[in-house]
Image 1 (tube, rainbow, N blue to C red):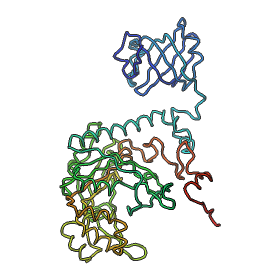
Image 2 (image 1 turned 120 degrees about the vertical axis):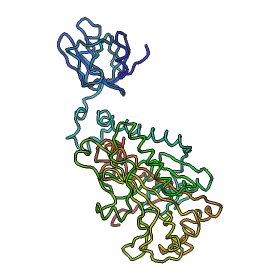
Image 3 (image 1 turned 90 degrees about the horizontal axis):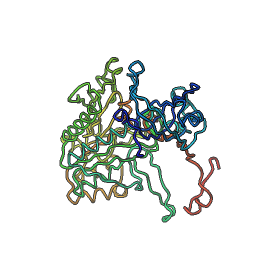
Image 4 (image 1 turned 30 degrees about the horizontal axis):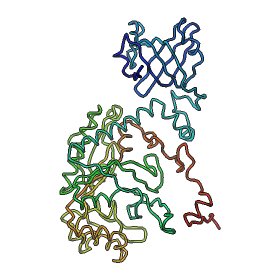
Length: 463
């Protein structure tokens, strides 16, 4: 018999079906045994009657056992209907029950993890993922990404993967580095973003690119930020700032409303950076009322015209977002002439939602002289600029189109949709607050043999 998903049982009343899943609850009434069984699609109550051949097996079954069950789908009497539950109007009269794999006693109660420590939940993350909360969050994340992908396909985008092993470049955070066995003493870097590759794809004539990209940054951890995150990464040729903003606004509106959410204001309000600071005191803000927060309303807004440069602690200039942005058109000459640097504005635009930065992008510098001038302002000598971004400058000399894009943080968006306040609640296997991996035991030392093969030695702190 072919398996039926539990979520489809309401359309199979009067039929004998085979379901497979986990035991959520067992209630032994003596003569009868009731079990709640769940799979990826839902939960159903089953009953084993006194004369059923499955009665002895039903008395053995335990919570979280993996089972295969055949039974007759029956309508419940009106007085027993549970209108607030999926499948609350049906019941499975169990005929056979097979324990496919018995389960040990779970390390915590899967019905409520609110009081369970982060350390325990992440150690047993595969159990935590079985909870209704995590099932909802991870499946909602998948739906969001799927709908965004479909929207981009409709708008002539091509999905392209970019390398994970790349060159260490200035992106605003520390790199995670990977030693090279074939080139002892040299290192790759894991990408903080696909920034340079997606711009090179524009030079390559791809025109409209996207990917669901993994980004890795060695920065201080907090509730809404981890070492790893996923971004919907987008780049477009022959566009101006409003073109990118309009496309992303259309995508977020279509996708979130199709998922049942309400947007506070359409079109999304747009604030210059200066206006945002004057009105909200920050460039990330929440425009909702307390009542709108309770209802899960989404309050999107754009912030643009950011300062391009800011002073470092040692008095030098550095970029506020990334060095590959273009200044606003009326400030191009200021960059080229290195004048009035503190007042130069960039074409950077951020999208904020419910107090979080949900994404950011810019129109890029596609002319070689602008990128060179940006590095000049930051104090790089020509040889250093060539070492850092010489490949980009050379590529721009071969007819780079005007282009721009954005990266939307998947975790931040899902946090807004679910109301979660911790990034770990919307990732399958997040890091702990101490930077340790879930379930597995990293980081940990390499063996002497591994170190020797890589040509590395480790110096203990203080020695």
